[in-house]
Each structure stands twice: as structure tokens, then as C-alpha cells.
Image 1 (tube, rainbow, N blue to C red):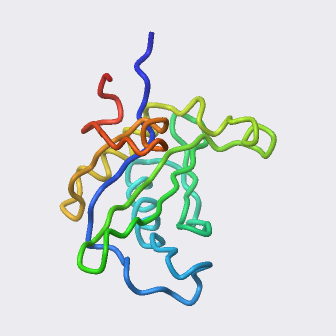
Image 2 (cartoon, one colour; image 1 turned 45 degrees about the vertical axis):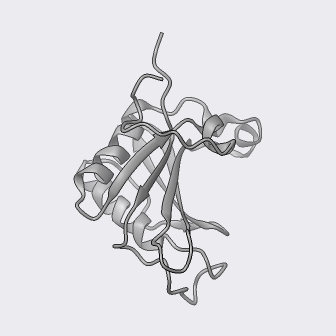
Length: 155
């Protein structure tokens, strides 16, 4: 039986904008466009196909890419801790699905380990990023943030 893949990642970084809202943000707290653009560049260096530019959600940004020939989406947002602290970047992997399959929960199923590994490699190789932690979505969604150092670490 295959190991379950952790698909939610948290990390710390002060290298990206998390204080200055841009006029193109849907909401004033939609930070992460620069993180998403950086991830796109790094995925391309790994030879992966990506969207040209990230898309915006009401809370952050997303980008589409292919891993193992399968479409995936990486969503990124920022959770501030307070005025003096940098806060935490939160990202999660999904399968790229159509409307009906998305409604039926298909985005959380069938995520390739190579997609998680590609994101993990980008984050852990960068001196701009620290404290990379991977979480199971069910735990993270419940407020339990006991993350592992890798998306593929056994439970």
C-alpha cells in the first residue's frame, strides 16, 4: 500500500511581499503573487510545464503545472501573525479538475507524489525559505498543525 501524501505545506519567508497591497489585488490581503511567480520559474527550471502567469483567488494566488503528465494546481496564501511577525505562507496541492469533478471532491484525490516533491524541492533548496512543514489536509483543516519535514514522510 502506498504512503499517504501530505499536500498542505507551511513555510516562513520574509523575501516576499506581505505588507503592501497592490491595486490589482481582489482583496487587500491577497498576497502571494510574487511567491507564485517564483514557484512558476522554479518549476520550469525542473522542466515542468506551467501556466504563463498565476491566477488570483479572493485570498491569494494559484498556479497550474504538470507532474507525471497530470495537471495539478498549487494554491498559495499568507496568514499574518500580527504586526511585528512575518506570518506564515500556506500552500496546498490539488489535482486540476473540471467543475463537476471539483464539486465531487476530485481536487483532493490522485495528487502525484512527484508534484509534492517538486514543490518541496523548490522550498527546501531556497535560502529565502525556512521551517518548511507538510501537513495532511484533514489535520490542517481541523487546526492540527503537526507537520512533517517532507510530504512523503510516513505518518
